[in-house]
Image (cartoon, rainbow over all chains, first blue to last red; front, side, top):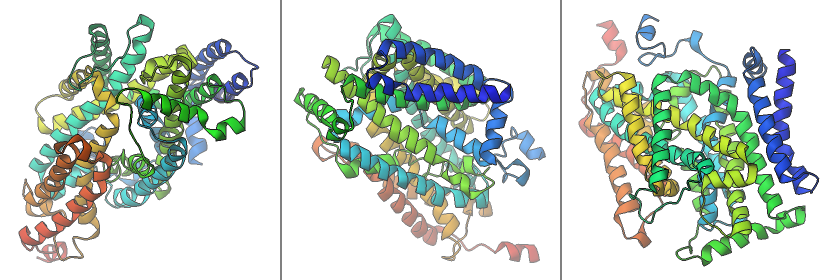
Length: 63
Length: 473
C-alpha cells in the first residue's frame, strides 16, 4: 500500500507539471487543466501524508 | 547529552555529536521547501518589470545559482563539519555574548521584514476570492487599501500563532508541499507560454513574448529601467548571502554526516531560484499579453494561469517560508531577552512582520531588500571564516572571546559595522541615480570585514597561552 501511495503521488505531481503541454498543443482546455490540477493536488497531499511514505522516500534518497 | 537536553535537544551550545548526524535526504528536502517560497512569485516578475532580457535571465540566473551552490559547498560546509556549532554559538565564542545580542537584534529585525514580504504575497492570494486586490501605493511606507490591510492582519496573525506553536509541524508540511509546489511553478510557466501562443520551439527561441512584455512595461510612465547580465548573476548568487557568505547555514550543515550534503542547496537554487523565477516572470508576460496589466500581483498571476491550485500554491509557499522566518526571528529576539518566553518573542516577531507586510510597496522592493539583508548579515560570516582559516596562522588567538572570557569583542563589532555602514550609505545615502545595487555590496563588505577583523585583532589582541600549555600547567 505504501508503494502504491508513493507511485500515485509521484504520478500526480508529474501530471500537474506536464499536463500543461497538452494545453499548449491544444488538446486540453485551460479550465479542464485547472480542475485536474486541483484534484491532483488533493491526491498528492493524501499520498504524501500516507503513513510510512515519508520514511521510505528518505531511505531511498539516503541510500 | 544532558546539556543538549537542557537547551532543547538542538545542541545549541555544544558540537553536534556523531549520533545526531543526518543523511542527505533531510538537507535536500529542506532546501527544496525553503527556496520555493511565496516570494519567488514576486521576484520573477520583478526581473521582467525591471527590463531584464530573456537571454540574460536564462544565462545570468544559471551562472549566479551555480556560484551560490559552490559557495555553500566550499565556504560553509567545511567549517560546519569541522566545528559542528551554530552560527550564534560560534560567533559568541569569537565576539562575546553581548556582541551576539546586538547581532541578534539586527538579524531578528531583518528576518521580520523578509517574513513581512511573504505575508504580503500570501495576502495577495487570499484576497483574490474576496476581490481584494494587491495594489502597491506610490510611496514605500504607505498602507494599502483598508480591505487589503485587514487581510494582511488576519494572515499575519494566523502565521504568527502557528509559528509560536512550534516549528516542527510547519517544517514537515513544507517538506510534503515542496515537490507539489515545484510542479505547480513549472506548470505556471508552461501554461503562461500557452496563453501567449508559444506553441513551437521556434516561437520559444524567438522570445518575442518576453521582449514584447518588456516593451510594454517600458512604455509605461516610469517604466524605463535596466537589469543587465552581471546584475542578474550577482543577484542570483548573493540573494542568499546571509545564508552562505554570512554562515547562517552553519546551523543546518553542522548536522551533515557527509560533505556531499553540501550540494543540497542545488535543488533550492535550480528549482526555486531558476525555474520558479522564470516561470513567475512568464506569468507576468502572459498577463501583459492578455490584459495589458503590468502590476505583478502574485495572487492574480497564479489564479489566472492555474485557478485555485495557483491560489493555494501562493498561500502555501508564503506560509511554509514565513513561518520558519518568524520562528527564527523570535529565537533571535529571545537571545536578547532571555527572560521572555519563546512564544512571546515569536508573537512579537510575528507582529513586526505583520506590520511590515501591511506596507505593500515593501514587497516591490524585494530585489533591494534581499541584497541589503545579504550585505548586513553576510559580512559577519567573514569573521568566522577568518577565525577558522587564518587567525591561528597569523599568530593570533582563535575564538578570542571564549579564550579570554570577554563579553564584547570590539574588533568584531568594528569589523562588521564599518563596511556595513559604508555599504548602507552607498545603497541608500546617495542620489537615486548614483545608488549602488545592494547585492553588489555583499562581497566587498564581506572581504572588508575579514581584513578589518585581522588588522584590529593584531592591534587589540593580547597574547594568550596555547591550550596545550594550559594543559601542561
